Image 1 (cartoon, rainbow, N blue to C red):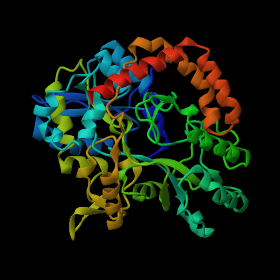
Image 2 (cartoon, rainbow, N blue to C red; image 1 turned 135 degrees about the vertical axis):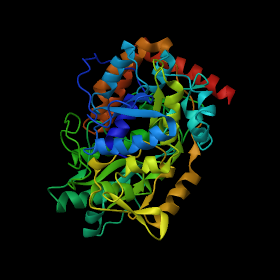
Image 3 (cartoon, rainbow, N blue to C red; image 1 turned 180 degrees about the horizontal axis):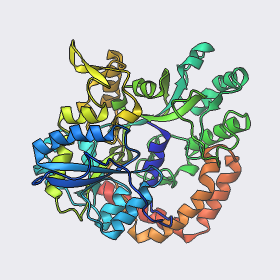
Length: 490
């Protein structure tokens, strides 16, 4: 849903080239989360983000159910967004004994043997969950024909959206119904630039990427894609695709017009969704978000969106929220039991995602699957849905209309599998070369995607840099060879 989700999935798809610092402190709770009862198996989970302020209470309630149903006690330790990748790399390389974690660098770590092979276990111990998984989740998470992930059932398909501050849309009677591409935004941005000097027309950060109907092979920090509007059998460089270059030229035009912040390529400032200081932003949405209801609920003011890309089931969408069981775990079967329970027990999951009943929400007396959100409901009194558990179990809130539900079903029904779904590029033969390419891309990504530089100047320069080194050609050839083999087996 947010900028950081997109950035995280991109970073998780490539090799880390960052020097790792010491692990530092982890956050969790001090009471209900620490220590199990005698005779109960204690499981340690690492989760990304920050703990809710009522974390102790959430876990106390959750562990009552978990202990009763599985004989296990779940201890969760949070690691902040910016530190998660580096700290989990240290934890994994050190051989620390833990049980469950939010997956980081899923494919690479699976290939390295960091995670437990769940191919058979999920069909037995996790059968209740396995039976309800969309087959795309299995295809998208296979690594060398083996499954290492317990996917969170959520947005198995997603698409990029232009999301607008509805109050500004209505204030100036702007017609967003015809907005389908970057090029269609121009007249709307011009109005906001003229009429609202304190509003940023396009919310842009250095991590924002120009989107198109691509399936990214190693995340959108590297240029290797399958063009879903072109030849599905070829791996191409996105910067050599003409319809993509058109959008980059448009974004550069917007940058020069002042619609995009002048320091977008270098600033660490983010546009908080809860602060209405922007007009349009790019967001990732899927059926589980029920259209704009989730964005509106989180923001606290109305947001309305238009699709920028089509809805596809890709390896990226199916890997967006995976939990893994460490190969160091001494309680692998029990860990699978708990992950299955979180994704199949309605009372347990809703208590985590919506918070305490009676404080954060109350049931709708007319509909057993609907709830009303109360004043106590806030982002820091609950866990996020997308990286906790099965969205199909969640109650529908009073913020979601029947039309939203129907739209979500229509999007899911119309979503198609990318031809590259399930293709996991084995990076080992070209590991050093990928690092070399990443170093080059780090010099160009932000400036090109934010429109800071003229793409007709920067892209030829970038391609000259890439083509001048044997690393780029070697990676492209190896990737195409592996992709050809993947397609031949389908």
